[in-house]
Image (cartoon, rainbow, N blue to C red; front, side):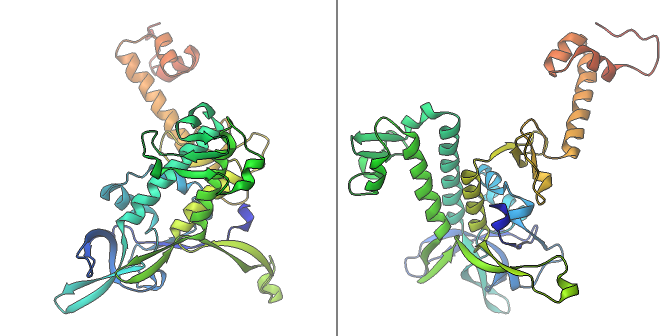
Length: 355
């Protein structure tokens, strides 16, 4: 599946993003928007800042969707994510700013797009976790209301009109041939299927009298360059790839790949970066090596592993200086006494270490 993902460059202008209040001319409604203060137009083609960088989210950050789900759904959290990974939909909205030299149309993207997708991503990741690790918790959100109707509710106290029907005689009746009460696991999979497929199609929203399209993934025939492309003057061969419309589409595509491949991820305890876990017998992919590791791996990179090791040594020395014994320190740091003894041993000989 990873080989079918198209190269998808995305632009980041660190420190360039800020929040402005836009107003709907029809209703007078005001809403926050993220902007880089650049003129309206295709974001990728606009003038670049000195620190502008281009990266490949699908290959350089294959677990970015987990970082996105962890982003606090507020102005500060979204701003921090944007300054590191770029805007979500590429400023496809517009608003007019009054400048000394006259009005200027700048590109914006509505904050609600961020809020909604962060919360939806969290919800679906929670369902994935319940299916794989806590199936007993599925009954909190999935309910058989009759022998042939199962629904999903975000909160058990929600009113019936907020239910989402998973299958019934009127909605996806084909599932009833395979799903029977009290099974909730397959209804949960069907819920994930419907929700993620909707995101892969994309969203159209009316804003200020215009329809904006964002998110979504499209299949495309693209050139796969051959190793000797320049020598042979050949474009390579055509292959089918999945290409996101924007960063939002790339994030939902990553989630879809994770669900389809039953992939497991872990957050690095040093830097917080999410990385994919591979089984010990799995072969590492050629791309994204820094974010793939064995199931027994705790850190995203060698650098973070070394940093953690140095921190443990320093903590051992601090605890010993405070009067703790080697056995207590070893237990606290999940190590063994001999290892801890080498960490805290002083250069001077003859200094007895407290046991």
